[in-house]
Image (cartoon, rainbow over all chains, first blue to last red; front, side, top):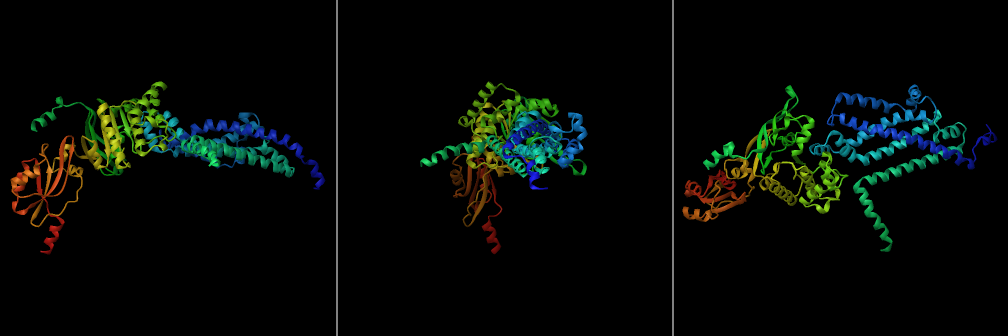
Length: 246
Length: 355
């Protein structure tokens, strides 16, 4: 292993954007598809689990225990193990074991288990008195879930969604090991297997920026959907503009 | 009096009740674990009547509220509203029937992410009322509770009293015939409590609402209710019209409704008499005329008299020279007053101890 041998293998600075940009797009597509599936399945599932629990709108301790147990199993497996163990299932659905399509299946499963718990936890923070009010106002269970439980928990669910998206970006990097493409794949093949420190560093920087951007957007959305924080922010803005004039 | 009572018991002369609870019982658990929270609660409220249900914490007040609007199904007994027994209805029909009962909750229970107008619109949304009709009705309701200028405010921008007004407007959205108030004034300061009470009385007068007002605050009962029922250990232990209870010297609920006083000590040689207004036509100048009748001055050691439903009610503590003895009772009875010799004042007890 000499310097000269490795130097030939290294990607030059000029080649970095051509390598990293498509990888970033792949990552975003992968996480985007996964998150769409996660939200569509996770929100109703989280609401269901919450309302099957004692005190819920359709209390059913037996069903709640079974469902809760299934989700806990999904949550307890490390992602790499989950990905490897459901290979046959993935192949059944997508017809392949590698690439983005193959990564979406285990990522969605892990994401749904994760997000279901987040939604359940968010709904738990809605005061039960609000649900009583809605019942007394003549709301049906579905109306109450939509307007009161999910309606009031929106900022909390968005906060959880932010955490979930970041976890999925991390999972997409792990999925890179099965050739799923994306930033993770580049980091593994160039940075890890070919000891290309430059590419490794670049992927780290891109991941940090992506995660920070997701967090910023998430925080902004939480602020936007929380009336007192939104109005406090709106009230503070003209003050700041006026400040230099004083 | 007697005639009124006979007619009062005649069902043909009475207005039909808007809400009637019969033998309502709620128990949790089975066998040894069985706890009876409500035990055969029976009462009725007529159109335009305000009934206060009072009781200490743990008496079953919240459970009663939940059973009246059927958020919790009672174990047995019936809740009849406008002639329909709600306890026999299926879940779907119950949801419709429940709209006849508007509920005002403790601390209002507003949705924090919705404006005042959007909170009031909630029951209309559930019913599927059109957007334009909802808008019109919400504006009317907010105006009715004096919050027309707060429609776009969020709950965090409203005071406790304003939040409760929004809660009242929401409870009235579907034009219920019964308003159930579950500790609606708990946690509000006295001035705000008064304004909420005034609003409820006003609404009762304008809309001919029947109101069941559940509270633990005796002074609020006096301000709002026509009748009162005391719930203790799950049963109604005493009930009646406020005026009747206040003018009944033997009613313990009446005694609790009268304001607490710290009386002065009697002069030497005086006995203490507790006097209660038990007629509905006590002359205002009775103290002067009774003094003349007895031939001795009557010392007022403490007094609280107020007008409830147009009738003077209250009590007076008198210091009267001991020589008069039982004559005091007879003379005061002429004026519609019930007098009882007090056991002992703290000071006379102390003096006896010395002797």
